[in-house]
Length: 72
Image (cartoon, rainbow, N blue to C red; front, side, top):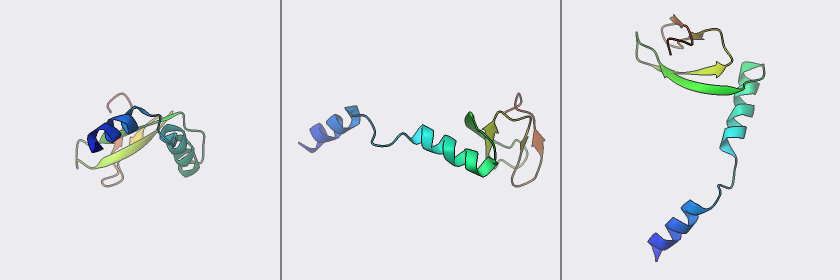
């Protein structure tokens, strides 16, 4: 019975539109309109960062190394 309920719930549409929420949230953080976002890992220190698209470059939050979007 529980498995059937989980399958039914998985087939339903989600209650919230998380993609729209995160676009709005990241737009507020970036101070500009964000069309998309991308998570990337720094090749030097291996920390995970967020890139707000469109962007000219990404800057690592740990080691401050600059990466170009084509490298990510």
